[in-house]
Length: 227
Ligand code: HEC
Image 1 (cartoon, rainbow, N blue to C red):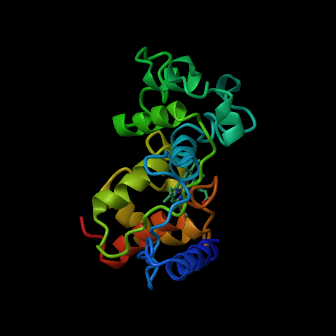
Image 2: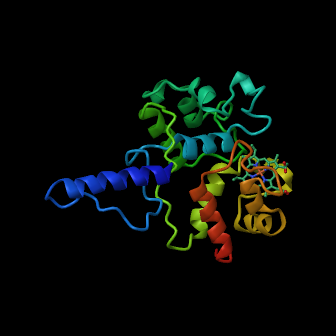
């Protein structure tokens, strides 16, 4: 798909540069990296950011997963998440209300479970404000130049994994809410294989994370897991 769109852009560029005397607009990079995105800048990426976050922190077994979500609320797919959302209107959306609720009897995730960070809540709010669309911006900038830091690798894991891999939900005896837990899972529990579903069950179980994020974690591991 990306190759195809690069080819189309390249041929448009060719016509533009030969069809008139002006400088070609956007000469095509001879070594295209992942810098194209099907989304406008600032668009919240539902498929690669919002969905893994909600499935990772809300749709764990025993919580809002299929078929018997708590209170009938199931949050493991776009169609089902949309039932809890009023597009464009966070304040009329059950999803937004429950993640900003402060009453311990109503707040989501409940007290004692890994919580959504302020930045993660804001991501969900922006997604609702932008119309709660099923966006997929998988072509997003994938920087392969610098060695990813622990902070970068950890941000992905904290968003997508700790709902099932931190107290009180320690699936497969694997905890991923600390540096040592993650390091141990890489060395002893096939964490990298699990991201591809090779040699272990696919992680996250709802579907592989996008290639950019997988590569980021793999490159952090290859660099010796700097802390
Ligand atoms: C919805 C719940 C859920 C989420 C989210 C989740 N896991 Fe898991 N994970 C499980 C369960 C259940 C098991 C144990 C059973 C199994 O291996 O199928 C497991 C097992 C594992 C194992 C052990 C595999 C082995 O062969 O021993 C690793 C490593 C792992 N998960 C990593 C991750 C990572 C990394 C993420 C985030 C990208 C993640 N998990 C997200 C539920 C989850």
